[in-house]
Length: 404
Length: 180
Image (cartoon, rainbow over the protein chains, first blue to last red):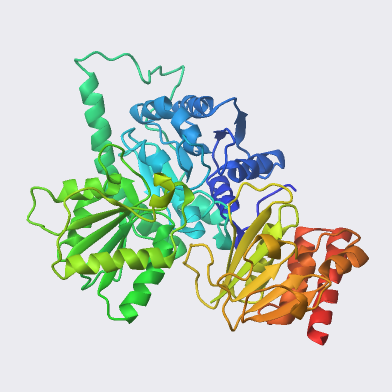
């Protein structure tokens, strides 16, 4: 097969959808190391390159550390770059993640979310990317294959904006989204070209105009660089909203900017989550609303920058907020989303109870019945029941397994 | 929404069958979703794959616990796995076996259908790979998808002679089930 990739609406695997979307963004350089459940994405991309369907330079490397390092070099030279990884692979990139953000390089990387070893487990939770939340990368969490396609394009627009100039992680749930077959509108090259301008780096390595990236910086200057990264994170907030709005006017689809809301008007109970669980929660909300339960849903689409102002507006009048975390910040007893929402409400006049639940760790399935049980607990609190100030509840933990 | 659970053994193409069913149903104008049970697949080990079909966008992402249909590619699984678990009473289970439905040890109130898919596969495809045959049987027994869409999906996935033979086997299974 040669020539351009087919566009249009068809049933494809989530991994193919993201590979196709990445290809439509015309990355100059792709570098990745295969690891389950990310493998199909990079297999598809390397096939596109081998078939001559895209012009990208595909750099084969011996590790994830090198994959991201190759992109740091090429991005600094002005190239648009792409990678994908997961779990242990992302952990191996840890040091380079800070470098990419500190050098203000707008690399886009798909994170196929998977649990962390030990024990080794290849299934989905959010521990891998949550553990990288302080590296200076924008993090967007995705609900379905179509949002994955559309957000991949938006990620370049956001990260490459001169006011932002930061790398972006597009986070998708491993297997649940990477291995699902569902209908997807695959983007047309001309339409993407019209929507997404070519990458014009703020600064690039150029022998005629020498500049340095990531130099040795003493205490007189270092803190200012870190402050600038935080300012860039802050500047990305309206850009994330803008990219979503512009995409909607160009392609007609919208999944929220920093957050999305569903049936939150008049909701006494508000569920908060990220990623593919949002789809299941939309069904649960519809079911409960039809039975008169005033429940709504807040989807956190951007975890970095953390959209606390937007969250506060949505939950201010609720009676209880229920946070479903697919991660554990070990030593705090709760998931990081719960902690950050609680922290964001401190020293404000919003006094809504926040209940944390840790769910779906290591691929533990989250059936509708599990969510319904959680909502029953929230109803008690909404009716004035006592709230435990302590840790998140670990949902569906098999205590009989632990005690044997 | 209709939910389908496919039971097979690693190597029998259960995941491929789920994908082809989702593609075929989409061609018939439905929304569809197919996904594997995400096990560490080994040849011969019990595996599952899931399919959802609906007139509306499918948002639910959990595994399938109360299927409308169950497809069993290998009847020896009946002893090892609760293949009819959660199957709706008004649902249907289709088993690849040379035996009659009443001879199977299945605990279900749902309708039980059988087809000797392995024999059809050996006769028409020349290999005991019966996943596409079971899709033809499913189309015939359930009416949820058309045989034509299944055949198109099969021919697109397996170009050339292999696809043609598989499509013939789909039609054969469909005709037997509809005629029986």
